[in-house]
Length: 378
Length: 209
Image (cartoon, rainbow over all chains, first blue to last red):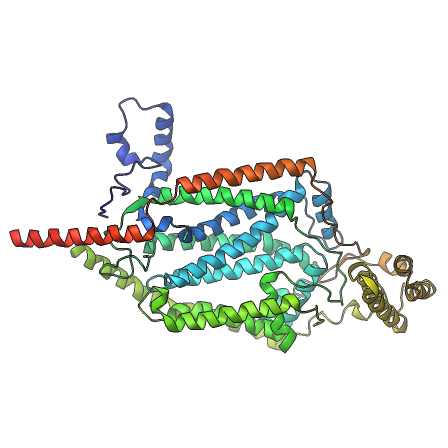
């Protein structure tokens, strides 16, 4: 890829040296670190990561997907620690979290980081989608990858839900109660949420399995596919930069950087994020409510579920299903409905107006939930 | 030009692949829905709703939870309502009705703490006879209150806080150091200049030829 700034992947000394260039660039007697690196790289092909990406990809907005992935990594690490002490058995689940909080060294902080990392992952994923939406990055040929992203957002939402239930406090149990009823509404589709599906086991155990194996496993598969498709389609062009002959790719004249530079900046953001999450864990530890009792509703769900719960207050339980279904359906259909070839948001007035209305409605519903007293639904 | 056309052709191929995959994915989704939804038509009623909701001790547990979670007179009033339901319920297995009535009297007299203890005592037998929780059963035998907020920062908290702040600061310095050297406007100017230069070079090449 030609460039004019002298900062291309080829001219810039690569962060991870390549085996191919090592022969010509390395001194006659390279140090042992370099030799060791070459040995590893020759076998693992790590320097293949130094492929060129357009320079605009190093902007903060273009790293939000990576920040989502870093939050996910933090969740996995802290989740593994928590899994050593958590008991997914109804009689003792809530108590085991109290043990983590009060008796396990650093347990409260680890749990706090886990909780805040989940919030960070959700927010970063949404912001990443907003960026992709505003820059039209979901347009041809990236429609498939947008769908992968929508599926991942659904899984992240499900992970937040299952994580809430695992606390096995009043809030978690009420969330579960809603989902069981939604499962009933869905008939056979909701079979997995039926306590009778495997009646000899507590549903908590199955949700634990989903939270620690099924959901992260599916997310990992989709992340891998997401990355592969990004590599396949290349970084989407920045719509405010000059266009080339194709609007699908960054213009050839845009300077490039090795992808390892992108990763390097991402790691820096990841370090910032880790520090911020650590501080949040100290100042605002994750809450744990009272042990659950069935048949009463005295809590509100996590904030990301507030908008459908306002709908539930108005139209009944089924409104949660229809609301969520409509939301994800709209997201999934977006690339196939928005056929405007322009990528810059200012040149896409219709889709921007529709999206703005939807966002305002979601925010209004969320605020309404915040100021409305808890209501009994089940 | 050749490179561009090759790329365009490649992308075109990809676009058509995406278009051909979408109906397949939709068909697969519909098939899965049909398979999974099918049994639902004939499936029996869910266990939810047939369980222990009608059992008297559950109302007493609910009253205890309301006392734990809802402060003030509102919580007491709601708890009393639940105790009344328990007393009116036909199923009073494992409930010591005399103790429960004492608990209700205590609540009515505004003695929340004593009322809660009596309520818990009144259903001790029912809770002791519970088997291991299955399905959506809570397994709750004692309503523990919400974990209280941290009273203050311990030494370990301060150490962790300092480390976190340090980590955030180091990350911020690195992020600033690794930031792109040009802003988008400058980058756009560079690209435009490079495009002009490339066009001029093309023109001069074609003139020479």
